[in-house]
Length: 449
Image (cartoon, rainbow, N blue to C red; front, side, top):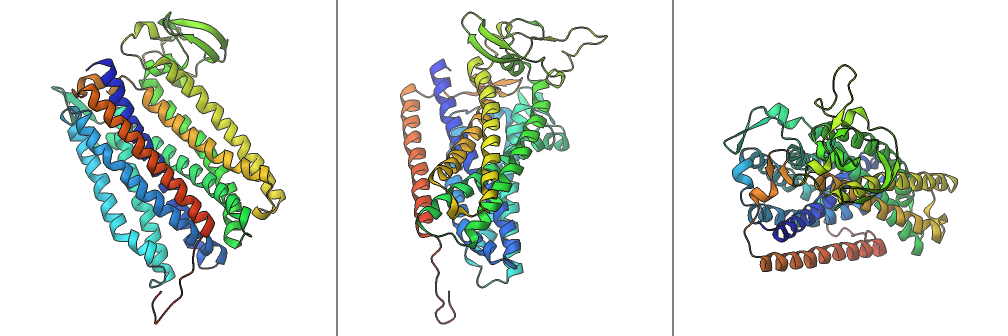
């Protein structure tokens, strides 16, 4: 597999995976928001108004997320044809459970959720909404278990170049709970910023109703909660993955030569060809939790870490891994500051979206874009930092890569960019249509809605 084919294959797969993960996270966050709104709708008219509006956006995110997931199954076989031969015993059941969960829960309950509000009782419809949220979470769980296992292959043993499951309990543990928490908190963050941004834009041209005010207040609080959860869960995920991925630690520090662990740099300009830092602003020591058991030596000896120069060919893209880690921290801090300011301003206005100024609406839109970029950077760091491995520490992407011609890889990548661009543009246009027209009441006629 040539370097160009490797890069093109990886770009295709990561583009599709990132697109799917974004809509899966948004769908997951909105599903639980809708469940909470439906629980409150029986006693609060504002919650019912908000539910009726946001369930349409949830359905839109679900459809696009489902459409984006289908090419990934094809790419798994066309771009990485030997993957299932190496890890089919692990990946096969997890993918099958994700597909089964999708069809069982969503096929059984989604229609009743979207169209059964009138014929069903409040309690029955609330149960249906809860089952859809549960089904969405289970679907995401099986996908996350597979992604976490690729980062840290626990619960399976490699025998004659084939992974065989040795412990389902260990496989479902590992980094999966922390990574699932990161996905859920990221989804809540995306949902909260989208709720604030759309509410602000809706009230630009029409007076707010009780539902808008409830979403504005709830979105501001939910964003702060999601940020706290995201920071804590990301730290938990790092404490699990970094000790077993020394090459990622070396790129994040960065550490070029093997030996005593260097201080963590705050900022640096990396001279990758020369294998050194052209400029560095030194920071604190590397947290001890980042070091593996082998690096944490006994009797007070100095901990050591493999250097990037000694990992040639088996190290991740240094610049991308280093820069994405700093950018993720910066964007998290920026979003936290923006969220605190938005909450403080909203509280002063009594969480009345009609009182927002033009600059305030732009501020809320900026938060939505910042949250989107933060999720892209965070997942990008997770995936890029594990390169060149498909299954960390054992199977590289080159071993399982495609033998397709470069022309076909370029063509498919171009088509993929156009298709995903059209889907993103369509999502934006339909959001604009929903913001403009809202929920159109449907009158009853002869007992029908």
